[in-house]
Length: 241
Image (cartoon, rainbow, N blue to C red):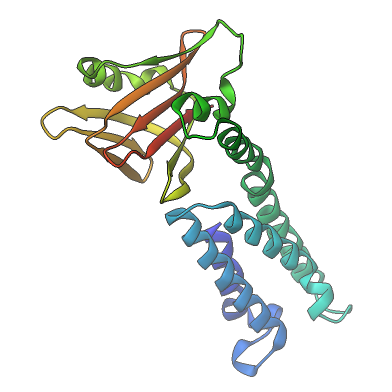
């Protein structure tokens, strides 16, 4: 998304004859420059702090890019500019649609379960993650003994190979924060001396200091979700799909 935003931003500067010259005060050129800047800025914010609103803004910006030629350009203008806008805008719409709309349901399920249970229990959170069904004996929540943490997490990346990881931090004062919306788990380690759990994904490492309790939800012998309660009683909820 950052790349697409940069392309939109740079197009009037690189090809002023086709997209308009910003230095000449061309309205179309400045519309592209501002749209590209907002798209790029929103995408950067989404990488650092991914939230659903960021994807919704990108979805709207993609729609704006698609219709921009008809709004800003006379009908006799270059069809190449029109096609470029339609293609780039469509790509933005498709990419942003998944986090904007398709990932909204799990979040709503988490909120509903919390209201029904009246507390943020591990069982409620794992149930809300979408992989715990009542009466299904193929699934079960188990608490990992602290003595098993190091060995378990050293092998976790093999067990979830091919799956995407999502990490949410859930707490009474912090609220619900999506730390990682979708990424690939590179590795995980628990260091007893530092009493710290490190979860490494592409581009970053998430550290949980002094974890107090770790619960695992298994589905047919394969991990589906992990809930780590830290020293501040916050839930670090990891789901795999």
